[in-house]
Image (cartoon, rainbow, N blue to C red; front, side, top):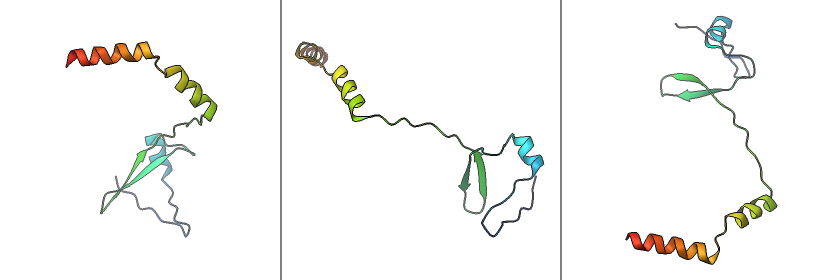
Amino acid sequence: MAETLIVSNRGQITLPAATRKRLGIKGGDVLILEDRGNEFVLKPGVVLEVDVYSDEQIAQWDAADRLDDGERRRIVDAITRRQ
C-alpha cells in the first residue's frame, strides 16, 4: 500500500490514521527510521530504562564478588588439572 505524505517545514510527516490504527502506532510510540539507500523503513522501537549506580553500590558489589585466597587457589588448581 503506497501513501503520499508531505514533509512539513520542520521536517515532520504525519502517518495516516488508518495506517497508525492498523499497525497499532499510538502517540508517543518510538519508531526507528532505517535508511536503505533508495527507501526508508519505519520499524517499532523500544526504550529501555537505564539504571545509574553510585560508586558506593559498585564498590559493594566488587567486595561481594572478591575471592579469598582459598577460593582462588581451588579455582586455579581445577583449571590447571583440566589442561
